[in-house]
Image (cartoon, rainbow, N blue to C red; front, side, top):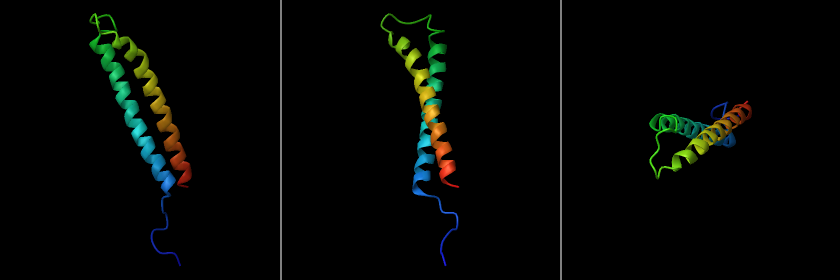
Length: 84
């Protein structure tokens, strides 16, 4: 007879859930900073003379937001299929 909870979560699914949550949080962070960048620079029309990093951020932040979002999606999808 088995003791303990019947529905025990496996370690890989816990790691997948954690990875999904962390990736999702990172995706939201970069999404927020993309919106903030465009708001602060008024659509990249108002940039200081040495503020060329805004152009890099305008490219990198959306790419990172999408990449972390996809990673979160696949991690959570994998965790749900492993826990069944």
